[in-house]
Image (cartoon, rainbow, N blue to C red):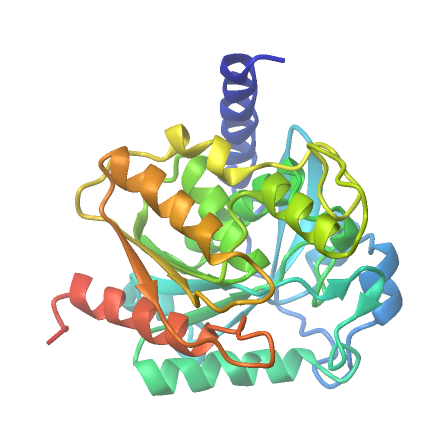
Length: 323
């Protein structure tokens, strides 16, 4: 399929998702809380999770989304400013944060089974308190209570589901503008949403992202002493949505800021591939900045400390409250 035909197909899928998200069903208010104190299932993370529409509608902070590639129930964890009854009339912007991958091969991250929904609500509350901006932790498909298969990440369906989820959450909470933020695979998701043509993004703060999926997969395979499978992700799928190949889908907006955040010593993602993404956006005329920070952890990959701060600064500057 040619790139032109692929972009046309993506546009049609996005339109279908928008129509379904705005028909009033995806934005309905749910009233039942899920179990907030039980840790998430490692088996669901490894093998996938199915949730029906009726089950999804029983979870307070979840949205049911549909698009031409399927459907998902996407869980999210909002900060207190978005939980109050009058939030839709007072809160007009929020940070939408997408977390990183939670599988390494088939192995769950070490803290996954001990993390609870309440922990994620507490994280959202801390970030709202620390940065004075409403905060939404969005669970990617197959992770932290969302339906879907995390092992199939970085394919188009994941990004169409998250794109429709942002629409539905915006509608439910009456938000006008969004700040996209992410860490690692979550930054890949945030960048993908930009390439899907969103026009409501005032800022995107993207930390340690993988924007050249196939190129990074080849580097990692060679590093592990394996022959590279050209055009294939390390997940084994050969139809990844390679963000760097879809930057022409990013809507022109001279007011929007895109912050590409990374550590040149990152041992997980490759900073030079992040620089290539930045270069391509800059050459296309977007308002983009490449920001070097010191990542945390033994791989110097975790840049959430900088991403939270920079996303919040974007939000306050946009609202006129910045310094």
